[in-house]
Image (cartoon, rainbow, N blue to C red):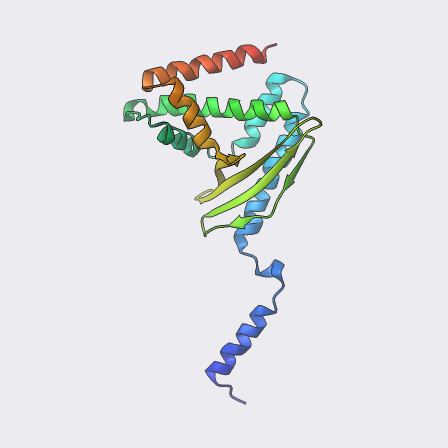
Length: 202
């Protein structure tokens, strides 16, 4: 029996509607959740290391393939309103990536998370998704919503939101108070890095 195009279309619609919610989820959901889980697992493993210098190194290594620190740094500069000339861009970004990595690492070390919980992935578009993550320690915890963006190499974190504030906004505000130009910014970032390196030895 030959069915009309309308009947055939209706049959396809019914069959599609019968697919379970898990099967109907966008393919991005699993990919983003996998990246978030990798970050959580690597972070928890790194925190257990006794040596402070090795622990910080491993925390940074855990973030490298997952977090686009270059993109985040550019967001911080944009919010701070600091314009960097092309011939100094590499220098400034290198210092800023180190600064952001240090601040995020120190916050994780402060919490000393013993478990990490990942919430439901919210796919906002073909190239953007949000993933809530809770890092829970004995005495404190932190809830952060990671902002993912799909890039050529896969899904990566380009920002995060803590207590209603984006990391790029928070750090942008801090830097705008300490630096009015590129030279002042670089001096400030270097001084912060030196202080962190000195503290890490003790």
